[in-house]
Image 1: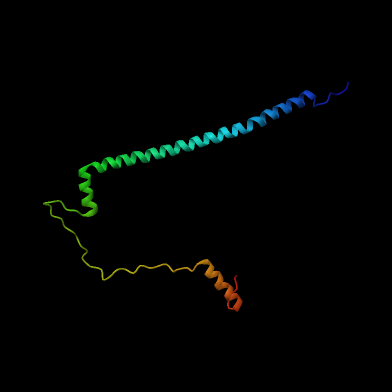
Image 2: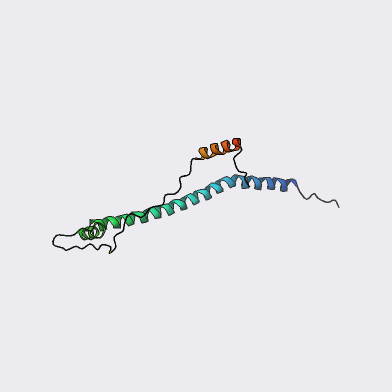
Length: 130
């Protein structure tokens, strides 16, 4: 009895058809996944923007309140209403001058540093790396 070949013509055609279907579906599936990811990102951004909008609307509503305006002007700007006595508490020891603010050392631009290193190498006064 003769052995039949393991790979018949029908099996080869079936394999080619399956590969063709897989290849034709690969790009649309990839695009579908990318579009779903884009939709999820847009929904997250929409939720963030909506939360910002709600916070700004609450702040706008608060600003419309005249009592809030009065309280904020007293707290932030130290305003005093008519007929009120306002006090300012000063430090018991006045400072003798402004504290010296340390300025960071100015670094020269990169091209100046490069040129100085070229000149130092040419003159032989440069230091060796390492």
